[in-house]
Amino acid sequence: GGVGKTTIARAIYEQIYTQLEGCYFLANVREGSQKRGLDHLQVELLSKTLKDGNPNVGISNTRIYFIKDRLHSKKVLIVLDDVW
Image (cartoon, rainbow, N blue to C red):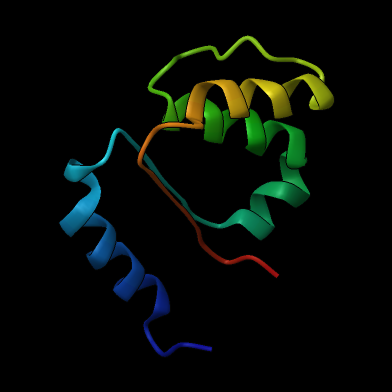
């Protein structure tokens, strides 16, 4: 419902994202996953969070190890909006 959850999440994100090594606010997850699929959203999330235009990870299982390797010691904030 419309109680301002996205607005609150965005405001908090804007206040703290500069303190982190990686961050991404992924809006409209439900719509994006229906249109482009979860794999595309995962690659987009990695690309933006790591500030890497092409994370160059194709296979979903390989992506898990890539995520662990690249993000395990970093402070990151990932906000997924409109998920259900």
